[in-house]
Image 1 (cartoon, rainbow, N blue to C red):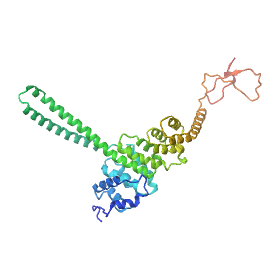
Image 2 (cartoon, rainbow, N blue to C red):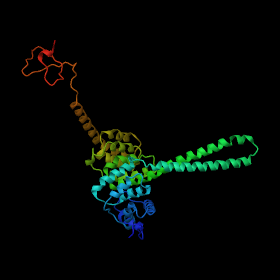
Image 3 (tube, helix red, strand yellow):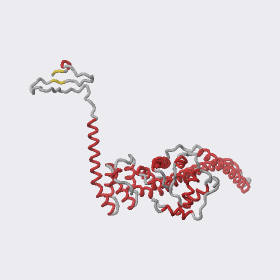
Image 4 (cartoon, one colour):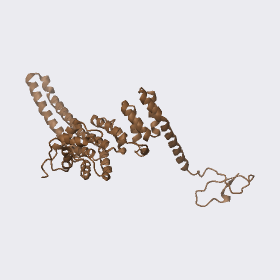
Length: 368
C-alpha cells in the first residue's frame, strides 16, 4: 500500500465498537464522528494518520510504539488537528507500559499549557486582523458613499464622514483581532479537552490534581471533558495513593466539593477518604452545615474522623520536625553548665555558649 493512500474500512463506527467496551469514559457518537472527520482531513502519509487510522477504521487496539504520537503532541508547531488525533489515540489504544509515563507527562503538559506557544499563532492572528481591517475600510468607505448620496448637501455629515470611516475601520480591526484570539484559543482547547479524555482513559492517578483543576476551567469544552475523566480516575484510587499524588491533588478535590452535583460529590468524598489529608478537614466540615443531601452529610460524617486523625498526625510530625531544627542558643544567652559529680551546693556559674569548635575554658565564664 502506498503511503499516500488512505486506509479504508466498510464501517468505521463498527470498528470503533470492537474496542469501545473496555474504555472509560465511554466514547460518545459525537466523539467518534469528530475524530473520524479530523482523521479524514489529515494527510494520509503523516505519522499521525498512519498510527491512528488502523484504530479508527480497522478496530486495532494496540500500538507498537507511542513515541511518534508523543512527539507530535509535544510539538506546538504541528497542525492542531494532528495533535488532537494524537492525544485521542494515546487514550484509546494500548501500548507499552514503559511509554505510559512519557505519554501521561505529555498530556499533562498540554492540559496545563506548559509547552511553548506556537510562534505561528501570532502571524495568523495578524493576518486575520489585517483582513478584518481591509474589510472594515472597504465597508466604511462604502457606507460613507451611500450616506453621502442620501444626505448630499448637508455639510454636517461631511464634517463627520472621515471620523466615521476611521472608527469603523479601527472597530473592524479590533474585532478581527479579538475574534482571531478566540479562534486560536478554541483550537488549543480542543486539543486540551481531548488530552483530558485521554488522561481519564489511561487512569493516571498523578493526573487527579490537573483534572480537578480542569473541571473548574473557564473553557466549557475542557470543563465538560474533565468531569467524566476525573470520575474514571477517582475510581482507581486506593489508600496506597495517600501522600503520593502531588501537592495540588487534595486542594483541587476540595475546591470541587462545594460546586459538584451529588454524584460527583460522593466520588470526591470517597477519594478523600483514601488520599485526603488534614487540608480536607475544613472543606468536608462545610458539607455538614451546607444545603446538601442526607447521603452526602452521612458520608462526610463518616470520613471526618479519619481526616482529623491524619491531620493530628501531620501536625505532630511538623512539631517534631520543628523541634529537631531548633537553632542553637544565641551567644548573649547564659547557660548553667553541669558536670558529672557536681555537688548540688556547688557555686552557681553561668557560661556563654561557645561558637568555636573547642569547649570554653572555666576562666572565660561570668561568675555571679
